[in-house]
Structure formats: C-alpha cells, structure tokens
Image 1: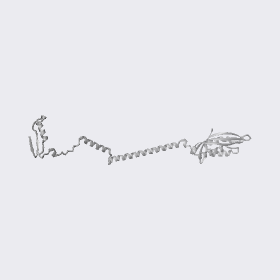
Image 2: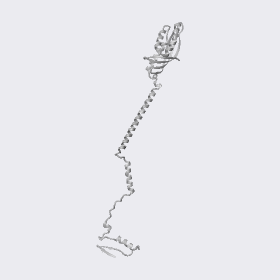
Image 3: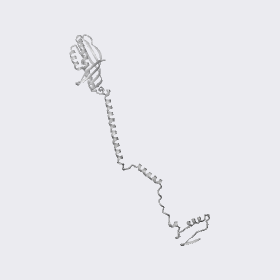
Image 4: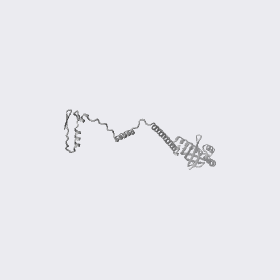
Length: 253
C-alpha cells in the first residue's frame, strides 16, 4: 500500500513478515517507519531530549555527609566554646601551681640535706679548716701546761696562783689535790721541775670547746743530783672563756 503526504512517500508492507509474527510484526514495523508530515523523522524534528539531572542515590548522599562530618571533626573550630577555653585555663593554672609546689618542696629538701651535711661531725670540726683557731688553742694550752707543770722550791706559790687562772673545773680540782704534796716535796728535796711541750695536736675544735693531744718532756732536778727527763702524754680538754682557753680536764695517757 502506498501513500503520498506532503511530497514524502512512505511504503508500508501490510503483508505478513518474514519472522512470522503476524499483526504484531506489522505494528512494530509501522511504528518504526512512522514519519512526520514535514518529511522529517519525529526523532530528527524534536532533537535530543534534555537529560534531567539524576538525583544522587542514598549511598552517595551518605558518603558526602560522612566526608563533611570527618572534615569537621579533623579541623579544629576557630571559635571554641567558652566552656572549653575556661577549662583549659583552669587546668593550666592548676598545673602551674603543682609545679610551683614541687619546686618549693625540692628546694626545702635540698636545704635540709645541706644542713645535715654541714652539721655532721666532720664538717662541724673546725680543727680541719680553721687554721687560726687551731693555732690559738694550741698556743694557750701549751703555755698553760708549761706554767702549771714547772716549778722550783721558791716558786711554788706563784705556780699555784697561775693554776687558779689557767685551769678550771675538774682539772683545777685534780691539780689542787696533788699540788699540796708537790709543794712539800719541792721544799724538802729542793726539787725543780721543768716542762717542755714538744707537740700539740688539736683533735677537735667546735665553737668554744677543744680536745687536744699533748706530748711533753719533763726534766727533774734535785739538788746535788743529776737531772733526769721523762716523756709525758696528756689528753686535754679546753674551753674558751673571755677570749682565753682554759684547761678543764687532764687525763694522763
């Protein structure tokens, strides 16, 4: 069957198709061959249809939202909440206070330790460091021992008086108890005793107290007889009173 429309001829075969589909086949062929009255195919006239934007799927939207949330969490907010800033400031003050307390405690511990070191017997003993003080007590004790242990028949009274000034405490009591006998022997036997201090060692010097080890040579002379000498070793304790060292204890070694 032939039809002529607006100068365009379209031929449609109404007979049965080769594929044996009957009317169904003819219907499909007719639609495929349909043309517009202007001589153009319907598809050519209308042109490509504007494609509508495809809405994002639920999965894509979820991924975008998760990405935004991750970015928000990873980037610190420039405008921090006032509460967070206040807590940070309080913690910083607490930390500074704790450090100050620790520093004070450490300083106190070091000071106490220093005091303990300074107060030990070794550091308190000025005999190890005070040369002038050691020389002074050595000189005073040596002079006192030379005076109280040197006498002659006519000088016992002067020696006894000097002992009252140079000795004190237990040393003076011991000396007074013995010197009565010495005074009588010196008069009867014409005895002369001369003492020489050979060496003095200051064992300990703390404040106004000193402990010394003294080595002496004593020479005995009796009228009409040859002089004899004997060494002596004394342990002496002295106290400083009115800027003078007095012997307060004497022990023979």
